[in-house]
Amino acid sequence: MVEMDSAMLSRLLTSLTLGFHIIFATLGVGVPLLISLAEWIGIKRNDPYYTLLARRWSRGFVVTVAVGVVTGTAIGLQLSLLWPNFMQLAGQVISLPLFLETFAFFFEAIFLGIYLYTWDRFKKPIYHWLISIPVVIGSTMSAVFISTVNAFMNAPQGFTMVDGILTDIEPLAAMFNPATPTKVGHVVMSSYLTSAMVLAAITAFMMLRGKNGTYYKKALKLTMTAGFIFAIGTAMVGDFAGKFLAEYQPEKLAAAEWHFETKGNADLIVGGILDEENEEVKYGLVLPNFLSILAHGNPSAEVMGLDQVPEDEIPPLFIHYLFDGMVGIGMYLAAITFFYMLALRLKRFNPGNRWLLRLIVLAGPLSMLAIEFGWIFSEVGRQPWILWDILRTGHAATTSDHVGLMLILFLLLYIVLGTLCVIVLRKMFHSNPAENELEEIAKAR
Image (tube, rainbow, N blue to C red; front, side, top):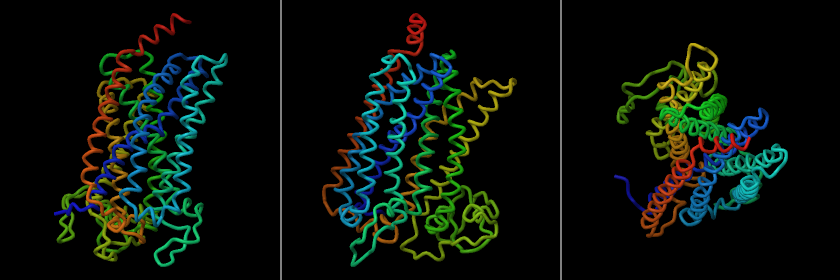
């Protein structure tokens, strides 16, 4: 049985907050780019449908930003309240990217306000579109800076350790550590992909309900085309991330792949059920040499197994399912966007086929689930360390007796916020459907 001490309760509360926040953070990174793309295409082609897409997406985006601000503030508070020993040790090192992330958010928020309140205020629409660029930059840089903090936790550098105290701190060296390129690349690209797929899923759902006008067809084409591009980018970054793990966190890779014995020509195991006592995998799909290829790009390369890891440093082995789920969903998203693109090119296929639309609707929640899987895999796979090979998670947590109460209160807060967000978004778009706005645009023209 897992002991529900203050450390475990702190982990649960932090996981709850991150799991809820990441929904809005992901949309906060990707949706601004899609808004900007839609408006740019609308201006370039003088197409009111794409311009309306940008208008409506931006309205919904503001609601998600508001909820994201609340949960992001909660994360900042919980870092200090729940993990005081971690902040005392590493706070000086990660203060720069935390400050830059806050600055990037305010930069984004200022231009987002200007963007929302200057529709139709310029004689040349291109000037309004230009305001969207700082919004895109700010949202993306927020993800970049906060991801460098997580990267530092996985590959800490930029300091000297003296008697348990970090000295000679170099903030830039800490930010640009070995984990930064893959961590930042994967977070940003997967956020773009997920946002595109969520918007595509909403559009496909509306089309299944009989709304097959030009507006919806163009919305689906834009989001699925973007999704196809970002799916390829996410897969490429994911491959680099696997090679990073093999070099810097081989324990995490071995646990994720249930690789118990150090050897060359290592096989990749997909799925299966683990018999931990005998270190045997049942019912799994074995891909010969694929783990060596994933880790080192060489089918005969040696891959470190869990036999070289101290028993108290082996990550939880259930992360195998998270890794498989994340990769499997990524492959599904790449496949469904590819088939849609193929249907657009080949006349004998119908991109509005109801079965294809159903698969696209499924892609929305699956893409968000992959984000959750990825973050849980990243954080749980680092255990027992909160700061890799320096500070254990159990030693970093608070010893307060009130974490359980905080967990209940924050759970209630997130239920209320999530419910209100859904109600507001639903009312916002149901009470003012796109067809009504299209009619108003047609009259104005």
